[in-house]
Length: 398
Image (cartoon, rainbow, N blue to C red; front, side, top):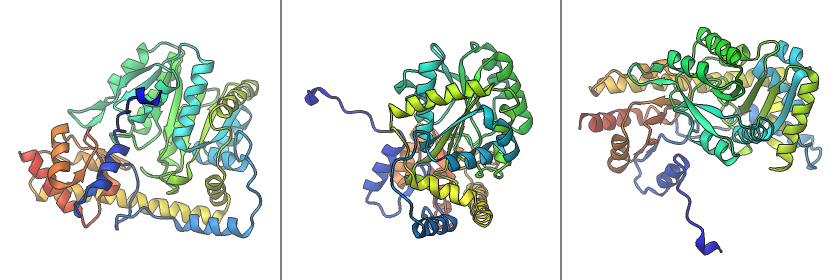
């Protein structure tokens, strides 16, 4: 029977990483996959993580299964981080929560929950969005639609187009919003824009699903949670998916969580049971090590301060490379105004490069960029930014 199985297409992003790794050219540069790199091109192991792991190794407990919903002290600490300590305490009675294998696992649990409990609901995704978003919902059997997000002419948020789409979406549908560091555009709403979006979503009777994978990478830990916290106003219903791959540099540990704010404690308990039912039929229960590391850091004042400092270092390096790239593009007289790159936030920039230009960058200059023109700014370093800018200039001028 396997002889009849057709090969699946390569993943749009991870497939590029495979091609990059197979490329023999020593000058190659990978600006495609969403992984943070330091100024030496390495993905760091944070010092606070190393200290937390030393403490865990010195006090071993057990390797028995975690509960279906995962480590309770972890989800409690993450709820405070995402929603704010005071809000999390006030909302505890009406909050369902579960640890998940990364943010992707959280999104799949959310999609399975929607399919099973909100029959007929569609998920509205931003145009553009992370390429894996539509795949996750499709695999779960949830229909997807899109709303305008990116204004290519001004390289900014198409707020009015977004609000107009929200006003026409059927009540009871789900709208997926990026909490911060929008992937792939790097464009986030301001606090005032978030308030308008939250009001529109609430008035239309939509369920917001917040993908919150980059807390701390835009402007700060609390600043980056502004959108989620505006949406999670008293009495509101919200789904939120978090990830600590980036801001704890725990990519391979797969550390995430899903939260559901309900209108009452009784509703939250029913939602909790349905989340656990979805988890049981999928991966049964989550891995332990990464969650133990995160909980250890967030629950210790000294480690928490150290972590916030290391996140600030990563954030500042990314923002610094944005400025360096814009300067280098100017120095090489690349046609166009690229100052918008400094206004974007997070690891990614929608560069405006065409698919043909991206292909030429890869084929002629060994620079790997996603076909949409999305650049991982964290892949830039002081040693490669000039060659990247010069190469972009050559393909743009051509």
